[in-house]
Image (cartoon, rainbow, N blue to C red; front, side, top):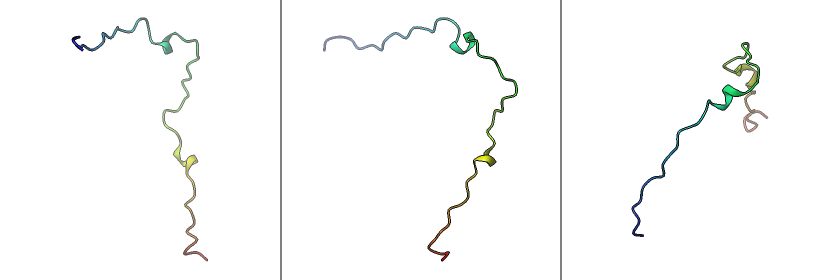
Length: 51
C-alpha cells in the first residue's frame, strides 16, 4: 500500500552449467529413442464377449 510495485530483479546465472563440470563419463553408444516394442503390452481380454 503506497509502494510502487515492480517485479524482482533476476540475476544472471554464474559459471558453466552443472552438467559440464561433472566427472561422469560420456557414453557414445547410448540410444536417443527407447525401443517401444519391448514396452508393448497385450490387449485386455473383454470377458463380456469371450465366455
